[in-house]
Length: 242
Image 1 (cartoon, rainbow, N blue to C red):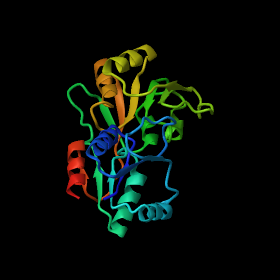
Image 2: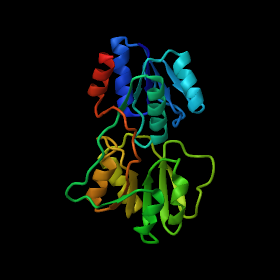
Image 3: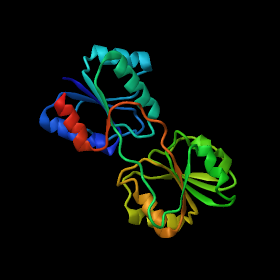
Image 4: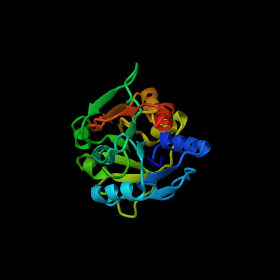
């Protein structure tokens, strides 16, 4: 067996570590969102595959016999493509899909389907903290009447794409205390985040609850109609059973 692990999450890192310890032949693939990704402990390729046709060629030429998709829940184009190609080629596919967050007592969340929808709920003049990454930043241009702070792992070389905004460097994970102090010092009124799920990214939501902040939480995009598991342990069990 030769496994392809689509990585980029904490779950992928834990899976890669265990694959290495068990001597299971695997290659990890990172999309290249971070300029200096942490080593995974197994052979790793960085960068996209160059489209669906090139991805098919890669799977065939490298004799990939199974694909474990541990990408981010919002990497939907990657997951949809991978599931489709694996089905066509008869290659076993499994997606590691952590459960989404659900609100609890004290949470003040507004679910939205698109980034552009946040502006309908946020009053002009508000201070808005974006914890949504850089790829969809342009979709918040209708918040130009607000003060917008966008946290990025890697600060772009280009200016902020619309008025009254600025970048803030930050490299996760962040503790709840860190997020609480940060939001308070910045005078944040609204937090915008993706419903990524998982315990570590949730600290920003816990801090927002303590501060009484409103949260616009972006719903997940549709996921592949394919086998999925929720935990690292179940993902490894699937690999071992192949």
